[in-house]
Length: 118
Image (cartoon, rainbow, N blue to C red; front, top):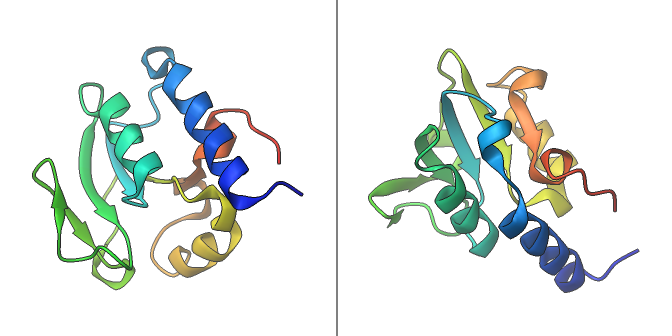
């Protein structure tokens, strides 16, 4: 299994070269994770979809480019909103946490979008 740092590097590298224009996920997106990968994901999506907020336990209460960063218990589903989990190395645990609010199909791993298999 890949080291966490190597996995993050591979995800970030794939994200930087990925073209979302042909693969719009939804009209409204919540990004789970406000670290380097989440912020790069925001930069790739900001002109293509509405970013509702970031969700990040450690950075809740802050913001990035005027987008609020909230804790998982502060986020609520809206019609048509997809949650993209940028912290894909912990996707299964994050998904379990979000399933009490979001439908299974509304929670997407960034690694899945990027076609990465670890």
